[in-house]
Length: 151
Image (cartoon, rainbow, N blue to C red):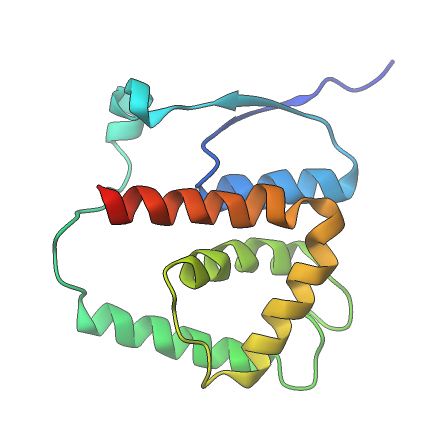
């Protein structure tokens, strides 16, 4: 008897949703996708209201930007001499991390000072291409960037 598909309530711009979708595809798992449309108010339910919010129009917090840069620096060091985050092969760690980097790229983050991260990002995108990188992750990041820039 075939396994039942896993139900995923998702929104294409969501990095965690994109990571789950690419991981499932790479593992050959079937997902039942349930679009959770914020334009129809799905994000106003009590479950969603409890979660963290983004506040538009506030200036970038310099301390948080410094922490982001520090974390990217750590990843850059971790990647020294490695093809992927956990070694020479793609793992779920790469999939989980790339969705964040795809978002950063959609918002035109400058990776130029992080050579290992730049190489890893390009290598991982290419490796994930057969598993829906461009249709799932890149498309979702572009949707998120467009939504937040036009909000």
